[in-house]
Image (cartoon, rainbow over all chains, first blue to last red):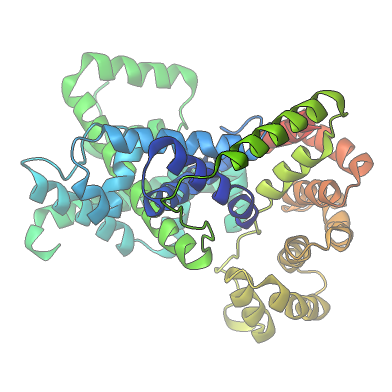
Length: 177
Length: 246
């Protein structure tokens, strides 16, 4: 990622400021979002062909900027990074925290992240490899030193069910989350 | 489809992971269309996974902020003199003429892509307990995980001398060499790993191909990438993109 940052950060942030009139700090923030999305595309195989790194990175920056602009209220974006990332991931028109049920939504997000924290390191890594990085089971087995792709599948089932169980327990005791 | 809640969650987990065969995926999607309660549950699980992804991104972003700093100068508020705009236009026209008439160099794009693909082999924390402990290796891996590859390198070399048959140490060493720019040495480490039938053979083959590519040895990288592309190899798409970048 260091290489991608060095090669494209200056170009992307300056072009974003020039084309959109946004603040430099906002452009830098958007570039960081784009770097993470670039990594996800790389790992999941979505990046099939790259003719120009800077153009590709700027394309991601542009899409992020456009999605954030569409949100009706931008106050929550500045305040809450998870809310901002949910906007970018789901492409919705408003922050998930920008509604009458803000407290409930915040509680749900807290329960989900707390449930993740309660999982062991192996489960957390494995669920991230499967659901976030979307890596093939064979690669996950290799990275985690597991015996076979089938072991990955069985372990993933167990970890996923455990995570859901923790979420349900926290939902049942909202005052503790 | 009449499943208990754990079986239903298991099915949804498989569906959202992309693990179902095409027929079962179609059946789940049909059920999403026909069964509102099931559709709501799938939506809820999808939202929970999106929160997981959002939390992961937020965490990564915080770490990226600590690792990298921007050096973009602040823009001034004054307008530029006209002569600068004219000079910039003349330079752009000259570049355009050069771009049209000079031969293109296809090499750098493939190397750019190879550098983008270069990610350190992840550390396996399940190792290194009890009799397996090697303090030198622990120190090396701490530096490796902190991306201080230059400092990790001598410790990994020493660890490898202590445990010459440890495949994972060899992978970490090879990646340290690549990430500090010594691609030829990295290729010498990965070469024997890629030739042996071990659980890490596929990973070693890929890292070897990247090291050859970055060392400019396209004659060596090419056949490896074609082999990776030709197999039912999980890095098939990446190998294909590198070959097409040539």
